[in-house]
Length: 286
Image (cartoon, rainbow, N blue to C red; front, side, top):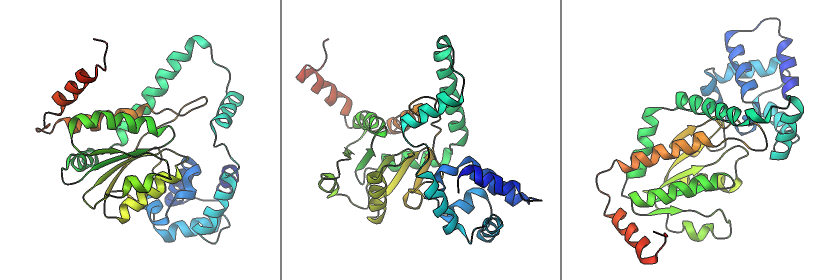
């Protein structure tokens, strides 16, 4: 079932309960991530019971959520998933913009994503994540692949100023076991992954959870394959026109984490040591 078929099926209802309206709205807004959803998490997100969701799906011709999810998954394997396909979709469905307004349009896109992300963030979750990152009991691992790798690397670079034992994980599957051999239950993982979700990152977060470690996730969809394995999850907007999605909101959240880490009192003279190393190796021109 594709999204338009779903909308058509819902529109055939003569009446809609409030719960059915919420389900339909949520499904239409999050259709591309439904294949990753767990029914318990999905019902919690929508605010309905499993029985209510089941009755809704029966009304549109499915025996239950598993059958519906399978149909959606089969359809989405054929939908827009690559940057080139996304670009062609946008350019074919929207009039070409004046090149003079490109910068202004991009700025507006960034600000909308930032505002939506900030409104959705929880101060309590943020404080919890920073507390986990500050813990000196274990190591702080960070992982991001594809476009998330740059964000992970930026966090790692600055976090090294602020605490010991920050480990940047390489997404190379052949060396990942070597990198993870020392993981303990006191360790914390910051994972960054956007839709289409790297299989390596999904496996890593699940494995880290099974080892007793605490995982913090930055992603762009509330329904995702990481939900059962994360201690804290942050959903940031990444909408963007053109070839690629926009990562500004995620980048801003990472900078907020760095500020949170920097508020701890003891820095172990790490700034002085790093600056001294810069001087010893003559890293900078002046």
